[in-house]
Length: 69
Image (cartoon, rainbow, N blue to C red; front, side, top):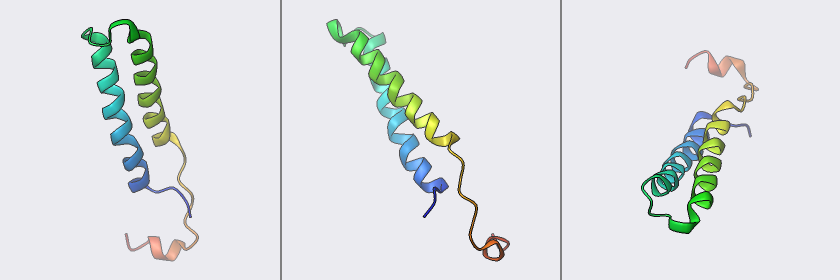
């Protein structure tokens, strides 16, 4: 079973939302002494979500089925 767009979206949306929340907390000063940790977690989550979009999709095993899409 290969990767598909739905699975990529399921990874992308939560990772971008959580990453943005961590970065926002660091930017607005709510992170306090944990600011470097919040920046690191936010950047890692956003990077992972975007990296998941770059993974190549597996070619279909049945190209005749894909013609109707």
